[in-house]
Length: 89
Image: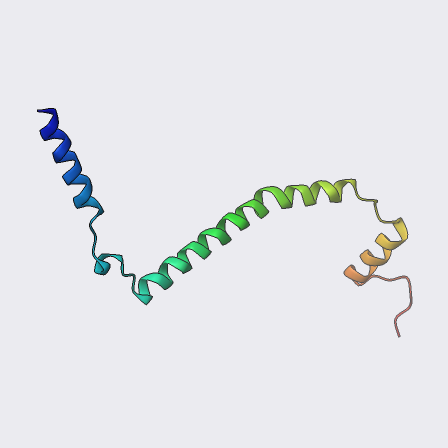
């Protein structure tokens, strides 16, 4: 009984290992689709890392950055609102 099971297992392994070259062919359409999907997956993972790690770190760094001087802020506000202390011509 053990011998019959061993022979059956060997035949099953041999049958599973026997393949033809036609089954291994990947056409150009399928190949390009797989490459495109793999690149899209990598880009998505990269953007996920950027979104969840880089932007909070960037905001944290901006919080601890040296604040601008008051004169610079006033000049920017005057330009933005159209109000300036200089007379218009």
